[in-house]
Image (cartoon, rainbow, N blue to C red):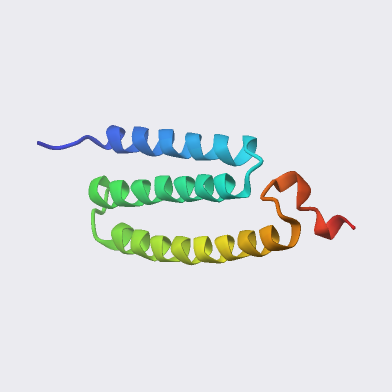
Length: 103
């Protein structure tokens, strides 16, 4: 049983849309960070799908997806560290109140 390419693309589109909606509408920094991770995972699904069903099907997309997952993990670690630091200094994770560079 083979899953068609459109199914992968549809799942990736839904994940990316949910992530974009969360990143643009939520004010909680943790939720924004998780939404960005959802968008990165949608991109990874596209990499793997095109690596499997592309014109030149090979492992390049899967390897690049692993590289992207590694970068996303590092980005999440740095993001959580920044959020924890801001929370300790300002006692909030509201994105609207994080305006240190505006002053």
